[in-house]
Amino acid sequence: MPCNFVSSRNKATAIWCRRLTWYPGSCSNSAVIVLKGAKGLHGRSPKIIRLHLSSAYLLTAHLLSFKAMAEAPTIDVSRLIDDRRINRFNVKLLVISFLFVLLDGYELTAAAFAAPYLVREWEITSLAALGPVFSASLVGVAFGAPLFGYVGDRFGRKVAIIGSCLLFGAFTLACIKASSSTELLYLRFLAGIGIGGLLPNITALNGEFAPRRIRATLIIIMFTGLTFGGALPGLISATLVPTYGWQVLFLIGGVAPIAFAILAIFLLPESLKFLVLNKRSRKSIVDIVRALSPTLAIGLNTRFVVQGESGYSGFRPKLLFTGRLAYLTPLLWVMFICCQMAFYFTNSWLPTVLATAQVTASHAAIATSIFQIGGTIGGLALARPLDKHGFKPVAVLFALSLPIVGSLGFLTGKEPLLMAGVFFAGFCLLGLQLGLNAASALIYPTAFRANGSGWAFAIGRVGAVSGPILGGVLLAMNLPLHHVFLLLLIPLGVGTAASVVITRLSGSGFQDGTRVEATTRQGNRE
Image 1 (cartoon, rainbow, N blue to C red):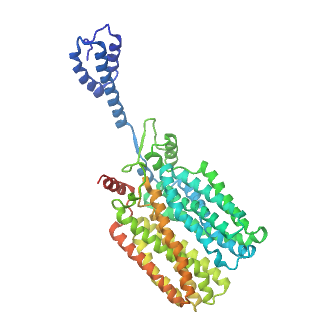
Image 2 (image 1 turned 120 degrees about the vertical axis):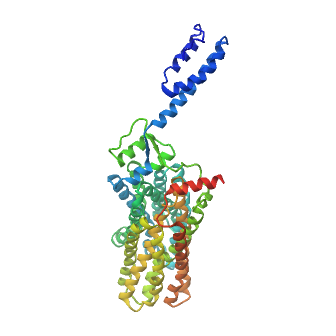
Image 3 (image 1 turned 180 degrees about the vertical axis):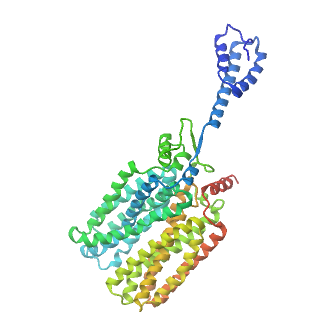
């Protein structure tokens, strides 16, 4: 459009006119519409003319920006992750995460193997006096899981993982200087906060990088590190403690996570979905996308999105009960409590039960290992069905645990059958726990996935702490062993009912965070 209505003496206004000719197509046409309104400016002051023309210029610039965004290539990172095959990036992440979880398993059992030596050195009257020390780390986990879940959703999974490792590494290392059970109790509680913070964030990180079709499988493989880590203190206790003292258990347990935390700064990636949703470093996003798909073309104007999800906008506990989560979260918590109560009851008192059944000490140790091996196999067996059918295999395993666990008390005089029963009890109970750990990362959206997992782990500790206490009370009542194990059918029955209900309500297969995110936003508007 010619600018003949503008005085040629006004050079600044002429410059605005020329700028408008730089924008082709629909953008300049839109500016022309604005300029047509300038016909009435003939004879007006140069200041008014410049104001009108600058408005046209800004409008054109904005329109051009919107047009460029619309035409820029867009990459949905959720689809990128789900549609691709496993490559070196995933294997590297899985190995690193497995080692982190292995450290977690080591920390949870190290104090138990130091206990016999502490009793002698500190002249403690009985092992029972160390019971609160064993529970202290579990209580710390209940605080640390939601605390670091918040950190993970707010500042990133990587930050939370490194922070939690440094925390439990430092306080585990400090256990070397403990001189009483009271000091050790406080140190184990503080270490437990860090232990609890690791699991929800490492779970969320792996869930956000795993293709949807095998997400549960990769998470469960990662969690088998718990069983391997739980076995390491026994090996160290037998080989190194006689020479270097009980302190070596906490020395290894403290130095290893600190070293891993330092390595994680350089080796552990941040969650790609977290980076995109929260508009973090573009360079980090591009580097991770290229590691996931080296052949993918990425331009300077390429946009990255997570379709159907939004970034972190503050966490409130009520988000865990919005939309579909109104029934998913409470039922998941019930299953966590029931499973952990039965698992920790059996795991803690199995050696005592076997001794009461007149099983030799060597065979009792073998049975304890069989219980852990059965759990590892159970978790791996649950993995693929969990990916394909959602909570259905969880309900099946809960139902199978009823007759298997209930029969343990009737097999005390038949050692081969008892060993088989212990194996299948581990298959069900620990297999369930590994499956529920994976499920906690699959039902929540990225914006509060670490919070969701963290609260599930924390609530589950109610069962973890109460299970051994309940076992001690029942055994102190001198009840027959078959009565003790039959009473375990109560929490397992409740867990079975909860798993059946959640299966009926959620249908086949896990919904990803997109649907939950949509219902959450709708619930917030209401």
